[in-house]
Image (cartoon, rainbow, N blue to C red):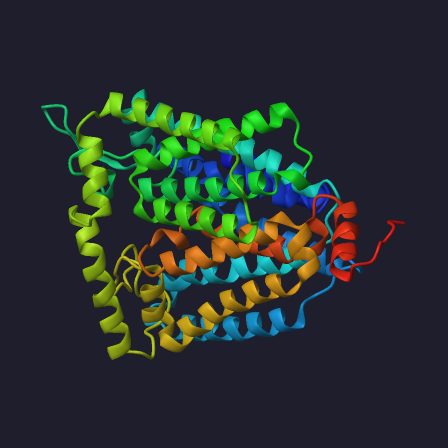
Length: 452
């Protein structure tokens, strides 16, 4: 009954409130989705019905946007989406076990539907402020959950998530996956399915936060809102360090670098002092917990001496060799080791996708991302006024690269945040202030334009 109540509550918000509320629901609930589902399974309530809220919410949102007479669709985007859908559906029916391909079909179809609906949905002037409010509040409580999981309730939360196999007589915890530890040390995973999922979520929060801060002169942020953003950023940096997610580290670093370049950010002394304080404080806290092992793990991870890091390049080349030797695809679900149709898999989201839908299908997907980035950059007015556009281009650039070396870019909740931000980046109505648009028109045309 509880899962049905939660499902109906979330769906009711999407049906009876304004359309943009669906996006607020996504921003707030996604970080807790996996834990809520696991908790329901742990309590023998079943979480299958609750887990469907995302797909049902997207269908409702898509339908409501299409019913709005004001919506506008990008024809090129629709054509690319339809072409990609044809490829995905064809490989779903070509799979030896179509039932095993349902999860892969869902992961490909619904993010695209969410993207299309967001780009066509008229959003209110205060949307960006409200979306960021829900996103940062959810992140704050999610990171508190990470601290509790790592330092206080590790066994209890691990049992609820179903990642603990057993505890031996010596008290040593045996986990169901190898990723739970690195060089004998437990990795922080928080309320997420695993440490890599947490790492990518932290990376998303860090890049989004950096986008807000780099756009700060054009955004009306109060002092207390700014302090809350800084605190959330510090917590994200702390959690991503202890997750030991290399993909998360790369996305954070390169994503923030891209934002600095595109926004021509000049780092002031005030920012350097605060940033240094946050970094030093985080390192001191981490080193107090693991004074020697942390630095050794960090060094081995960066230099690829650590076992899983060393195997990553081998996994990459194995996937590439397999896909180019069998380039026509094998059907959806054939790289998911949870299904009976499982055939082959490597630690690469894109090489696994290529094995399922073929090299041509992978190229089509990458061109999809490239087209979205081009659409976002082509609209000069929206790109100047909409900070989501800057974050979107940064996420596309680094996530496409990371998807060749990581599975988790296509995991929960990162995949939905990635496509959600791409949609907001193309939506011209999601700018912070309409007055800013007039200022940009004026600067582009070198004429004084008065807002009406």
